[in-house]
Image 1 (tube, rainbow, N blue to C red):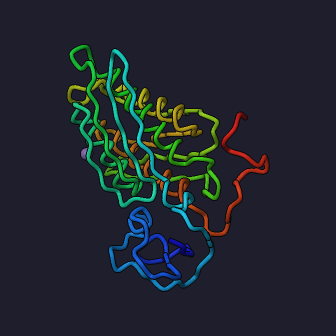
Image 2: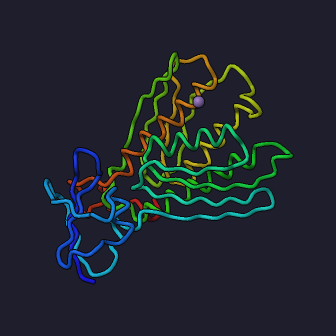
Image 3: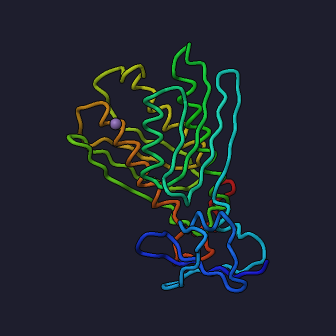
Length: 261
Ligand SMILES: [Mn+2]
């Protein structure tokens, strides 16, 4: 099937305009999902900035998703993500609080996220928490592919009642975590609060992201953690987005964000 797809930024509901020129048959499912439209898919293009022509499923937009599995003696984890999703999630790690956080990550980044984890929770939550960060990070890296056309940077300050957390990140392929988050209690439910740094560290490493997280002020430990995940979500949402002005260029004067550094 031959078609031409024009993608532009739509300021209202759907993130992209998709217009198929002839034949006006149903577009590939991935494109429909990305455009946030159903079978009646045709949206007339307005403010079209970016054009992809081709006769096959266009990798640039259709395939910004990934599935990653990882099995060790400690954990067995599978994650599926779609960067251009709608914040739909289905998360089961065996750790209730971690599920709650990953659901926030999906909801506020609009990244669709499915996670299944079976870990050695009879020991403690360490391996499952850390390895979940690795697998989700890997999935993000894989879905980003060569990172062409993305905004690359993202930042967010998220308040939650008395707490405020700032995240600044660079999808740089230079993994680095700055973690300025202090907890007043060692436990949150059954979970050690020190494990959250492990999750962010694992995610930053696996995703290839320079990630700065700082809680500016706050008291409630639940709010502190949750604001970290929500701020990550918002910053990530900006950074992974396709920049309609960037076209097919890589946002680096080096010319690459994908190879060695
Ligand atoms: Mn909560």
